[in-house]
Image (cartoon, rainbow, N blue to C red):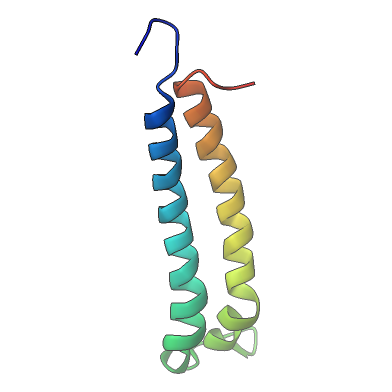
Length: 86
């Protein structure tokens, strides 16, 4: 790597690592909690709704929105680390 030039290969490697991690979390929440584990989670109720139903209908959406904000925060840190921020 030349002086002052960012290592873009490592930058994209780290970016893909973040994407895989965050999308894996979303997969576990949406598919795992909303479909595979719905029966055990339905034994728990929050606000009169079964927890498995809540994850299937709303929880995965909320988690996805939270993961978007986490991704933005991680990418801002990554941009500064590799000096590619705007």
